[in-house]
Image (tube, rainbow, N blue to C red; front, side, top):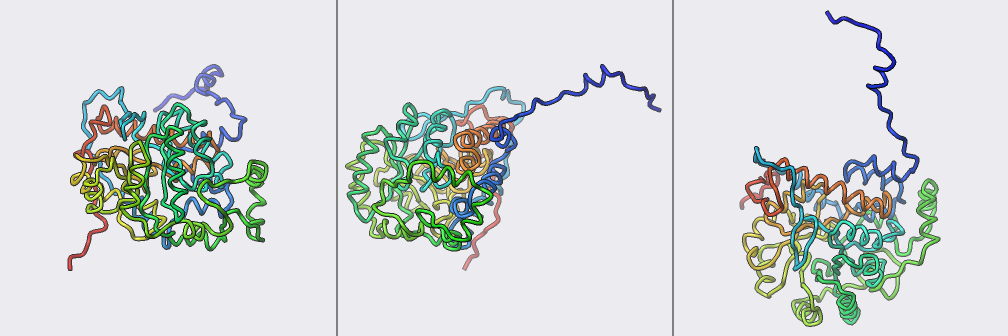
Length: 411
């Protein structure tokens, strides 16, 4: 039988350590987020519904996005044991330059609608972390301002081919003049996808007030205060605004985009030329034969063609077909550092995060982006150590099995 005794006060004090309170609400809020999903929950509470749904949503039934995320969850890892993993090297080389981590920030449009710091927060956080930042053609911060926010880091530019070709050409020249080293020529947006959340919310650029938006704004006054007291939204590529995102995209994009446009941009652009939005082995092979520096396997975050191919599922076959000729990057569905590790193990040279960074942005501006990068970095490092991999270069297909959920029926 256990002998009981009254504890001495000094013994109680030895067992009890009081945590120092955090009085800064933002720091307390972000510290409570342990995963990207936690940041998403905070973002949803703090951001008006229309802006949050624009970020969080996808096309039509949002099947492509759900499948992409599920694909990463349907992974089985195969660790090696008895390895000294006290130190791991998460750095890599991609598109002719270094990155401290095997992921970078993907291009996102209308970013200052999510938080007033927008691309400035993303670019400066990327620079501090030593990873690339990608500015969208539909970004709400100028090329030159992004360069100022990330003067010593790697800046990439994502290019849409506009109906007015001179707009695209001038943006390409400006990005080159500002020292951006890589251009993403985007090919999956001849027209806008049907983003039904935006239509149901009446989401427009600029935001239009209605009884619904006013009611939704009441518990989120900080967002509207930031929106109304900071510089007006400006879009480098749009001559006019006033409509839904889909209407603006359809007015700006050109469905006649072709290899001829790619050839023109190749002449104008002096840096690394990467095609973003590749969704088949055949297209990857054609682009490799055309001498492109790299491709991004992407279905645009599920925001264009619903029921599109899953980029992570395509990865092994594409790498096998073209991996010796061009560098392969993957995006869509990444919500955890383990997703990044799985993609690198199956042959991706790099990965891109979109929503994962935007959830952090909405949750806390620049500090929220820092927190998102910190969370993913910790998950990448921990997963690598548990796999017994000392460096990104050691990750290989034997570390990962893609479990089958969607198996094609044979005719």
